[in-house]
Length: 281
Image (cartoon, rainbow, N blue to C red; front, side, top):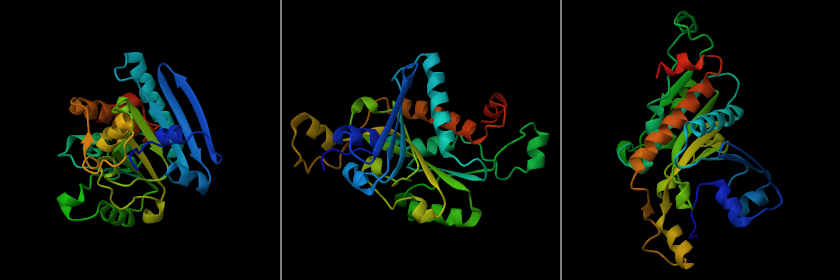
């Protein structure tokens, strides 16, 4: 397939409205949110996705302060709808920190507050009443560790037994304009490396035996997708494994990781004063 994208919204727009898919949209201060619910296996096969919920938050490339706040509020609110109300959460940053377009996951988890080691009594004493238990993991990639990412996460989950796993990863888009400007949240898990054309074993509920939620931002477009968009040709075998990324990708990763980490930290600890919480980062 020439057009490669990790975004359910782009897959839906390519196929159009079909039975078994429910779509809801709303917009506030330039931030558009689209929820796509794939409810039947037939619809899932037509879209090339798994059954489940996909929420896409579309941002402006350069946002005014008010829009930045709206973007953060929107991502935080949508993420809260996915997370279980209680129980420990394992936050996993997928990707390779040495390859900038693939460094979103590690960059985000570097800013996540790990609290599993903090007792409830200590949290109360330091003014963090209502602090949730959170563990953080950046497992690296197969080429760095010799271990499949899914194997590492499965072992950690079996050991610490979280209520759910939240994975963050870089994604691939069809449209160049979406790079760094789109956030996708879903409850179907993720395939590490899919964004950069190095798809590994999937990380989902079937594998880990606990709910798995994913959060991602597109950072690349596959060259085969660009060739198809420009020429309509699909036999571009020489280009299919090449990817295109913005020249300001360092800034894209920095902005996206700040937005996601802030939203995650505050969504995980809704009972803690936000200013106090963010001062701990």
